[in-house]
Image (cartoon, one colour):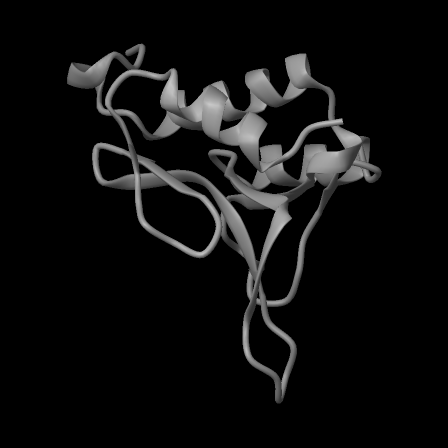
Length: 119
């Protein structure tokens, strides 16, 4: 079971990661977000920042669909996320090793090559 502190620890251990001030967590590399807390939107109500859910960059729609279909207990999506390479991750459902893999993969896809990302 992971939480926002685990996301923060993993993200800040990656080179050139910057944490953006927010009500939850928001991490970027090379000016691009790779993991942040879920800004849940309910029509007619103010947005709620959910630190128990992480938004992860996944690269493309095929990878997104594979995660959503392959591990529905971990991943989900929400209105407004259609057609974008982002998944929502239930932190309470993920172990530390898998969280580290997911956050690191998201970082690799967003980090510029000159900041340590593989070619």
